[in-house]
Length: 395
Image 1: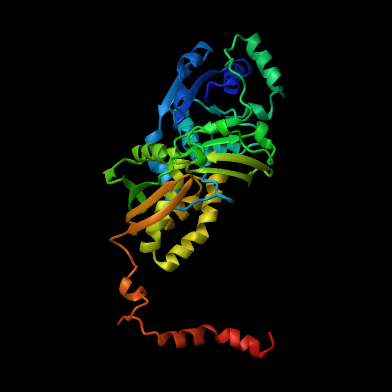
Image 2 (image 1 turned 90 degrees about the horizontal axis):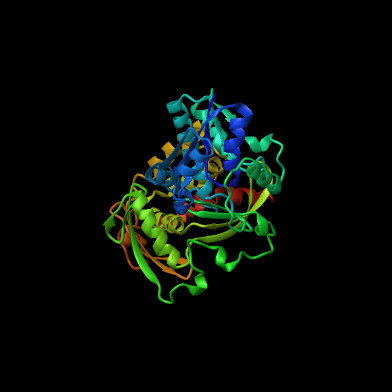
C-alpha cells in the first residue's frame, strides 16, 4: 500500500508519517507544495527520509499558484464576508491537485493530510481530491486516531525517536503563502484581545510606516496585473515585489470573525499586502472600462464565487461556469492604475484605459452637445410610473 502525505515537517505531519507506516504498513511518499512558505521548507526532505518516507517531493508551484489560482480569483473580485481575501483557501486546491498528481505518478491509492476535523482545510483538500479522482482514498488521522492532546503527540514522538522542533510553541497557528499569512487559534481565540504587535511578518505597523506616501502604478490587461511601475513582470514576480512595497507601508492587515464551512465562527487575523493592492487597482480600471450592467452582474456573482473558493469547490462545475462569465466580463479591464500607499491605506489617485467608457464630453457639468438634459424628464416619468400608481392606490 502506498500513501502520499501532505507533509509540512511540523509536529502533526511528522507524527502522521510514522503513524501511517505503523497503522497501515504502508510506503509513505511525502509531498510539500512550495506556495511561498519560504524558510518553513528548509530541511524538509532530509527529515522526511530520516523518519521512513520512501520519497519526499518539495515542489515549487509558486508560479502556477500566482497565475492559475490567485489571478483568476482576483479577476472574480472574490472577497469572503468581511474582507477575507482567501489566501489560505485558494492555496488548498492547488496542493490537493498536486497530491493527486503525485499519487498517480507513484501508483498510490491513498492520500493523507493533517487537517483537523474542526477546520475548513479538510473539506478543501478532500473535495478537490474527489473532483479530480473519484476513486482516490483519503486518510485524515485527526478524525479517528486516539491522540487528543499535544502532550500525547509529544510522548508518541519521543517514543518513536521523531525529531520535534524544540522552539517555544507560538501562542497561535500560522499559515503562510505568496498571497498572505493567516494567524488563528491560541490567544487569538479571544475576539476582544488585540494581536500582539510583534506577531506580524509581512507588514510593518501602520503607525510605524513611512511618513511620506509611496506612489505606484500597476498596469492591467484583461483583468490581470502585468506591470509594476512600468516594468513587465510575471504574476509571481509582480506579487513578490508588491508584497515588499505594500508591506513596508503597512498595507493589507485585517482582523475578522468569519463563518467556517463546518459551522462554527472563527477569528482570523490576516496580512495580504500585494493582494490588497491588486484588488484596489483592478477596481480602479473597472470603473473606467467595464460596462455598468456587466459590472453590477459580476458584483452580484462575486460573493458566490468567494463562497465556492472558501468552501473548497475550486474544481466544481459551478466555479468553472462562473469563471468563464467573469473572464468574459473582465476582457476589457485594461489600463493603468496609480495609487498612493500610506500608513496602511490605499488611495487611487489616477487611472487610465484604452478601453475607457468614460467620456469627459458627456460627463462634464459644462455645456455639451451630446446629452440633452430635457430627455431626463421622460426618463424619470417612465421610471416613476409604478411608484405613482402605487401611491394612487394608497400604498
